[in-house]
Image 1 (cartoon, helix red, strand yellow):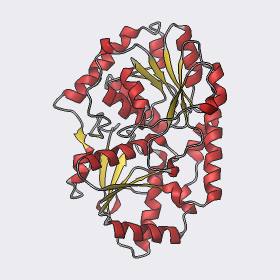
Image 2 (cartoon, one colour; image 1 turned 180 degrees about the horizontal axis):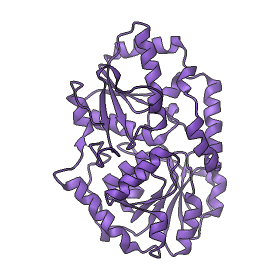
Image 3 (cartoon, rainbow, N blue to C red; image 1 turned 180 degrees about the vertical axis):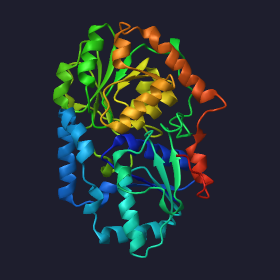
Image 4 (cartoon, helix red, strand yellow; image 1 turned 120 degrees about the vertical axis):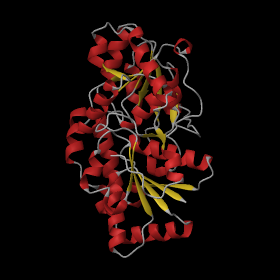
Length: 365
């Protein structure tokens, strides 16, 4: 059994963790998903929910929050950790795959209590250590390290398959742009959506609050994330609903993918994903062979992601594309570069196979 350890404070690491668990099960390996926030007291969960709302509405506050955020795992009491360890023992967990650095301190505390830990694999979704991993040494004690992107080496060492289907051909796509702000809907994406629509582009726009739908540009297909859902509620992919014009958001029918997240299907059909450069968005871009139009990052780790994607020829900064008059043909070359990255001899190694056959020796910094 492999336990995948994620955190609900960032869908950009939670969803890749869900994908890993799905792919492991498909290949006959037992896998479970643990969301850190399930161990937190209710008052701390309410604080996280309030922060999400504030960060969604004010990107400047969100960027400051990246630098100042405290470690939520400090609110996990010892009894909850002991119960978790007892459950792992009963399930036969032999390895944990850590997608959030906020799990490092709970693992250390269990070790300090004298509890025997499973083998540890740290899975970095971003191209450098994200803020949660800067609070401890994730490579201590022979920990296996897997990186889906590496700023240091300028490549994609590993990957997690999002789908078994090949990317859609360029000519077979509808020509729309998928515009979103990551899992919490952060950044300048709504303002950029208005500019892109004014330039004549058709959009798929992912929103997070019902009152935002009325301001969507004309001709835009609006998709709504369920504002009442949080990753610690269940192990499913995020619920997403299509909001037809003049439809009451309160009556929306939310659906969720079973093999992967629903928004990936929108990415497969798009000519570009317009978003801040979160790690989960990089994974979507790769497996859909859909170029990224890069918006302002939320922190230094996302700025490194943006530089890597541009250096690899997989994306373009928003301002650079704007200087071409938002020319759709400018996006064809990044699409072809992404196709080559998936099909070539230097394609990323499969993280699923690395975990299934791991003896703990794989280390890609």
